Image: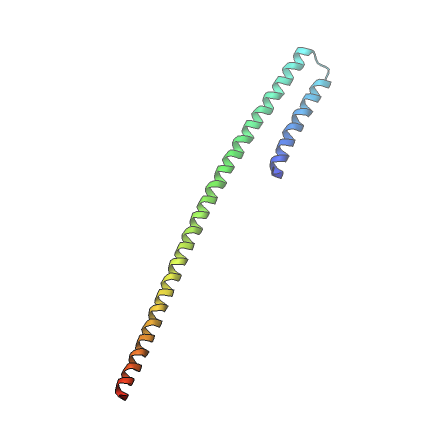
Amino acid sequence: MSKGKTFIIGSLVGGLIGSVAALLFAPKAGKELRTDIAQQCNAVADKTKDLALNVSQKTTDIAKEVGTTATDWYGRTKEAVAQAACEVKSWKERTTGAHAEVAATQEKDLEESN
């Protein structure tokens, strides 16, 4: 579990326990106390829903950003590989052409010497 998630859960549980303890030790009638506890539970539930929605939205945003970055890196890598392949092919063609020219010259020299 991440530190942030653990902290949030701890804060919510601590807040709930603190609220219930404060209500239980307050001098109130039973019905009024139950009403206050129900209201506090509803408030915590609402905060939890808001927090979950916020975390969900941030997670979605991060996932989109990661996807965009990965796609960008894929494109850059593909371009670099294609460029390297073209350079190797060009070098090979130049080298092969030079070798063929040398071989032709050697063959011509050999024919002339005979």
